[in-house]
Every structure is written in structure tokens, then in C-alpha cells.
Image 1 (cartoon, rainbow, N blue to C red):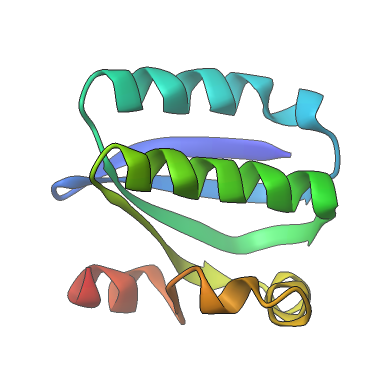
Image 2 (image 1 turned 90 degrees about the vertical axis):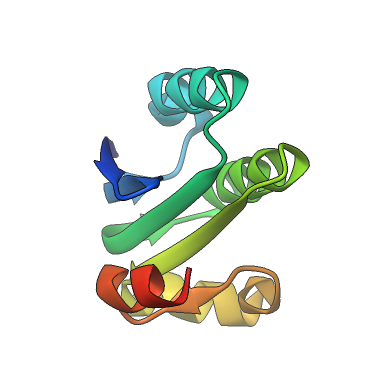
Length: 111
């Protein structure tokens, strides 16, 4: 799994790609995200268009990030999601918790 965090207006854009199946794959992302939360950044757009696969460990990571953003008074929304990951979000009913948009552009308009 690879990730990139970039400025996107008044939010941070987190782009995930590859396969997210082990927590250890996301250690650097978790550290950077926690540092951003501690510094007061609490608005996040997440692009999962290039995320090929995620399992329960990966879903727990996403839920944890969502919870941290919310607990800091902010929000994390998903702008763009691969079909396989979208199917998993629907099966686990996480699509009722996360705001999921078709693209980063659509998420930006509605954020």
C-alpha cells in the first residue's frame, strides 16, 4: 500500500493505492495522520480509486481515521472509490457511515 497526503484547499487529500491488508503497511500513514490531527488539521478527503483491495484490517484503519477526524471536530469523506472497495463498503454497511462521492471533484464541491 502506498499513500500520499497533499493540501487540497482547506483540507488534506489522502490518496491510497495498492493493497491494504496489514496494519504495518500503514504505520507511516497513521503517524502522519495523528500528527496532522494534533496540529489542528481536521478536514480530510480520501481518494480510494487506486486502492485495489482492502480487508478488515484496512477497514479498521479507515474507521479509526474517520473517528479521529470526527473527534477533533472535523470530517473525513471519500472522493472516488474502486469498485471492489465500494462493494466491501456496501457489504459491511460502512457506506452508511462514510460519505462516499464518485470523485474527488464531487467530494470537494459537497464538502
